[in-house]
Image 1 (cartoon, rainbow over the protein chains, first blue to last red):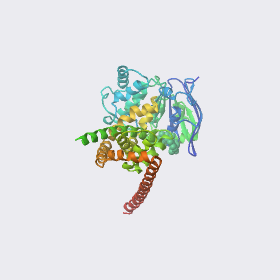
Image 2: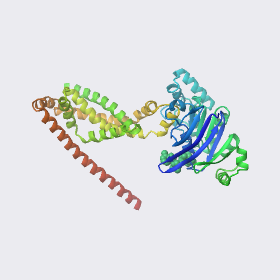
Image 3: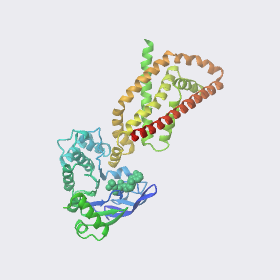
Length: 247
Length: 211
Ligand SMILES: Nc1ncnc2c1ncn2[C@@H]1O[C@H](COP(=O)(O)OP(=O)(O)OP(=O)(O)O)[C@@H](O)[C@H]1O
Ligand SMILES: [Mg+2]
């Protein structure tokens, strides 16, 4: 049984159907990258997984529990699903350290001292031991995003969802964040929406190409980049190579 | 000198009640499930439409009518609080709405309930953002209080008690009618004004664009 099992997800906003039957699964500690054009429903899919935007139809299973079952305690489940946002969404009134420790204190019920120690470890892990007492407004974009990753990691999630984690960053800061993500490979499952094709090619176990609310094609990076079976995949990868610089 | 002490006491107590109530209603309006936003909206519309003096009288005599006897001082606190709440909701609401919703979503993604997200993430930021509006409202209450005392609201109420005792059913009826007339009057004027404001705004925009 896979760790995460997504079965036939449908989601509409008003009259437009954004997701038209998405199915895939992930094993423990696997890394998958979702690519696709803007407005194709990638963010919507991630929000459907942790039920921030519950799907209209279909099932999401994590560790043998059905998250789409309305009677489940979703707050308990969300601890197991980290979320890293494009625009960071840090808590502006808290220091980097408190941003990471607040979930441990208020959700995991750790005492202040334990939460602090754990938060410190996570911030070290993302290379921010010097910034622990700074507020989000005093951090660079790349540092903010690394706090966001540390905040997600601290909860000991089974999987972390990344929604375009480097899209809001200046080019010279992207590398630091991608390095941190690379260092997590094989330690926690990651589902990453990104346009960073170099990263996708080098790190992902599988690439999922979405368009028009469906998965057009998925496969290991080598196959996807060198011999995609679908014409649409070929076109998209060709276009993105010219847009973001081919490698 | 007694008057000053009473003013300060009245101000502090009604400010405390009004702030608490207004903060709850502001969160209800922005993040609550129906019917909470609707109730808060109706409250705001009604209590912004009724003049303070009418609220005082309604509270004092209205409560007496249904058998709750309170002293004029308490009535003044309740009246001031009810009135100020309607205005303070706006202060807190604009503070809440200026905090990006993404922070609440991030908190929920960590496993916080909506209430926890409000308590630990929104509330501390909202309070800081509300300080200017809050201190402004504070001076307004202070003024209202001293006016209430100066024109003898407390005394007025004591006198009025006799009317109520003599003609109970008629008194409340008259009060409610007066309040309703006031409300409709103020409400209509407000509506008219905000309509004008909108029209003015749009035409203003056109002018700047045309240039
Ligand atoms: N809350 C919402 N209400 C209405 N429509 C929405 C909502 N959220 C998303 N949509 C619509 O759903 C479609 C898919 O949006 P989504 O953000 O999932 O795309 P995306 O693939 O993440 O795009 P991008 O690469 O720009 O982030 C868009 O057309 C968007 O306008
Ligand atoms: Mg998106």
